[in-house]
Amino acid sequence: MKKVAIGIAAIAALIGTRAVAADMAVKAPPPPEPVTAPFGWAGFYIGANGGYGWKDPTVIFSPNDVESQFSTCGGGNGGTCAPPASFSIDGGFGGFQGGYNWQFNQQWVAGIESDFDWSGIKGAGTSNFILGSNTGPTPSNFAVSQSIEWFGTVRARLGYLAADNLLLFASGGLAYGRVKESVSLNSQPGANHEFAPFGYGCVAGANCFVGGNATTELGWAAGSGIEYALSSNVSVRAEYLYVSLGRSAVDVVAQSPFTQPNAASFTAAFSRAAINTVRGGVNWRFN
Image (cartoon, rainbow, N blue to C red; front, side, top):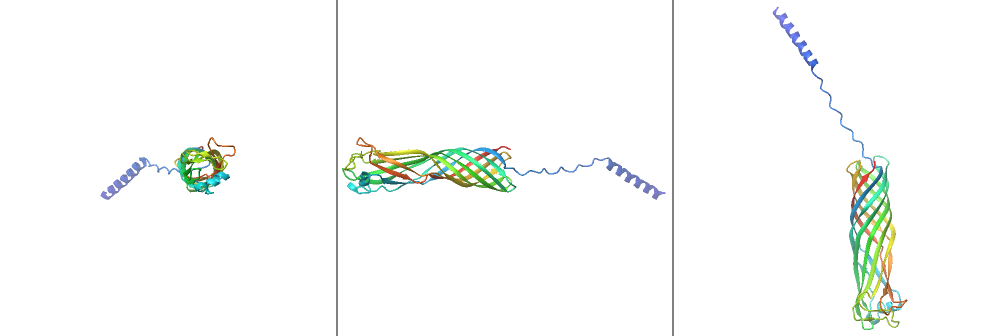
């Protein structure tokens, strides 16, 4: 009887334990991890940019008439040819851009972009030489300057996605810009540069000859960069861009009471107005 009682007690305890377990709440499984959709680059965007540009232009001087030739490269009255002037231009710029992207798959993006920047890229230099005069050889110089007042581009872009939100790209296309140039011939005061025998020169001093122009030039641009998406709408970028505009020449004409319609003059031929640029920017994407 004692063994039977012990067995009945054990069975009752087991039944009670199962009943309590059945009454306990079942713990819910953890929620699945959210799935993040790949970042999409397709669509329109606008943004702002700013950076720094630089280049080393060269100017070559040529006499345009018998008088200018005689008093410089002709060696008249001790004159010498004016050597080329090489100098640096540099400065900051800033503006805006906009474009459209097409995303073909998870690796490749193509698009078109246009930008416009106001520029403070400028610089000046000199070319020292001897100007022959009726009073003898006179130390003189051509003072030159060049500035890029503004520029813009319209470029195709092709990009590779190193990650969903990291775009490596190259671009190239049309460039345009406003280029301003000036030249003056400055000579030692007191000399008399009448450019014998015709007398179509000037009285020596500052701005003995002057010339300048401001033109809108066309060219091309190419470069590469990296763009990183901070969110589905905002991205930041860094870029190198080479902007090559046209060549130009300035007529530098004698300024004097003796000046005639066919006054003595020089041509200052500037090398191509081209700049290296590095810039950063931010874009807002509409999606």
